[in-house]
Length: 432
Ligand code: PMP
Image (cartoon, rainbow, N blue to C red; front, side, top):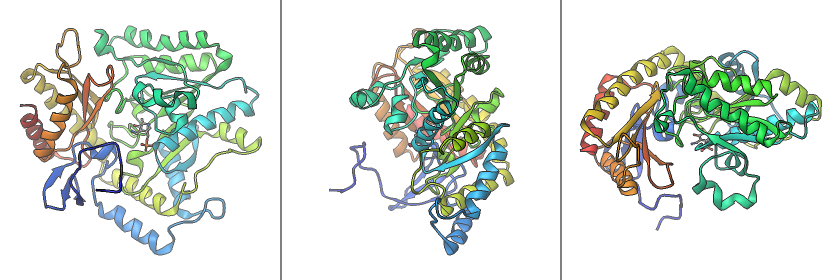
């Protein structure tokens, strides 16, 4: 018996090592990391520059409590992160993961509104389905009943609007009327809740696990920003998964040019090397909070120099190897190849995403888009067979609980054409 426990009941092989886009188990079997873990290992495994930066930092110090010491590593990563962020978002608060990054964003929003005399605002509107993290605050804004319902009495469950799943509603994602249709649901919800009680709206610019790489329809992001401005509501972009370059731009929202008030990032920010995340906020908001008693929030390991040194080297690798451009280019190729599978497999109902944040969804009928009747077993079998083929893909179920399975295909941003070919071969054998 293993003394470790996680959700999965089925044992997985023991990991020996990772290198580039591949991982090897203790028996020497090779797996192509087709999901970068959980969309984390963006620059691949065992990157020499990141490991060297970590070793160099380890020789100096691995921890300095942030209230006792500043460190060069955390200063440098904060400066770099602010440089990469949209104009005005120039203050960075480090954390150790995605849930902490979202939790920090929610608390920053609340403390800012308190600081400017808008303490009646506490509701954070989010989308259904969505996933924003496992801590109780981040869970309160998560739109996924199997995860939230058991804990409902322990948190104030927040209002939700439908995520813009145009492909399920038979609407054209390129038609601006579609964007308006879904975005205006936010305005209706704000009015219903009472604008003076609404603090913020949180969304993933390109959806992750909960929606399977959902791309917003034309005009959606812009209209959401307008509505937030009109009602004095803060806009939080959860870029925990979409941030860091995977979509083909550093921030997912860069595809639409919209600027939020707060961003959270993690996953690819630590890239599988270190637990690292950040909450990035508008400078004037942070000043207002600091002037009125300070930000009452923090995590012990936040901003530790080892994590920050790794994070900085990782961004250096992305920049010096043009990995964002590669993600865009390889993403287009992989998406076209995945779309090609729709000719062969009638049960693939949709292929979507941006850059290397891609997904396909299984349905029993492409017209009605009913989830594949085989549901859970099909989902598990596909993952298991792909595994046997030496390919790791990431699966999630959100439509109506156990059915409506989708699969994320999100290899590291260093992948080349050979790697894409290998993914397609493994996937085709598994789908067959
Ligand atoms: N937000 C989003 C969009 C995520 O995808 C995740 C993780 N899947 C989280 C938050 C939570 O991150 P973590 O698991 O690192 O706490």
